[in-house]
Image 1 (tube, helix red, strand yellow):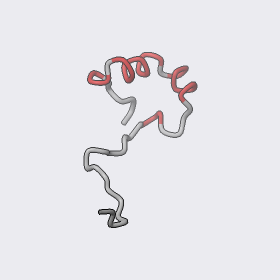
Image 2: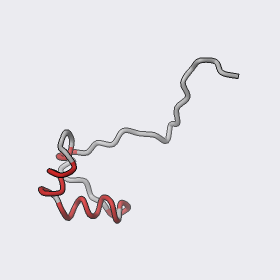
Image 3: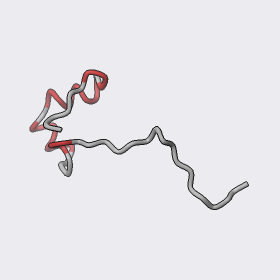
Image 4: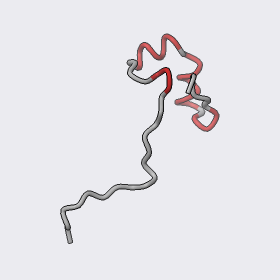
Length: 51
């Protein structure tokens, strides 16, 4: 039964992107190529930039 209330998961959290916040992906790739690679290819090893 639909009660009209939205459901959400407590597992969904906002991510603080530090220096990346507000930047485009292309500019982030230019400024932080190694970090972008780590973020997408080895996220369990990713260390945020200046967070």
